[in-house]
Amino acid sequence: MITVIITLLLTVLSGFTGGFAAYSQADGETADNIAVTIPIVIHLATVLPSLVIGGMLLARKKGDRLHKVLGRTYAVLMVVTAITSFWIGRPGTGIAGSGYSFIHAFAVLTLISIPWAVHAARTGNVASHEATMRGLYVGLVIAGLFALLPGRLLANLVF
View (tube, rainbow, N blue to C red):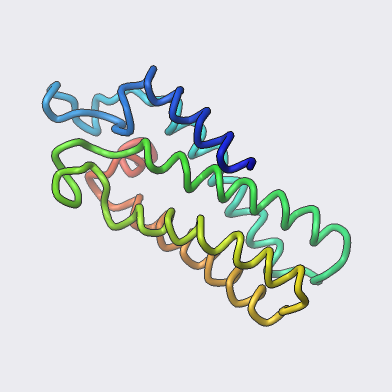
């Protein structure tokens, strides 16, 4: 239900920010002169703490109360991160000119992995939970590295 509410909220927000695209080549915009949109701000505001919290979760003791609180926080942040990524892209580029690139596959995988990992933890399948969450974190790091490639929006913002 939370995912549905967040998706609807971001759909409305995207209507005020030019759709899912961060910038449009048709309008003469480039990664160098793009305004940062609300979905980009939300995406960065959730992905950066996810990197820190995910690393902490992998490094520290498992199963205690703090692990559960941090895990829930991480899961919500990752779901919001994944959903907002669908409003970040360049029309006319990507897969069939949709503005979506292969990096967006990580978002789809995240939206599948989080419920899977939660179910595994609740049913006592610790090995599946651990493997899924570890894979999710590795995917987060990989997607972040791809987002920092030259010519991409995040690379231009950071460098």
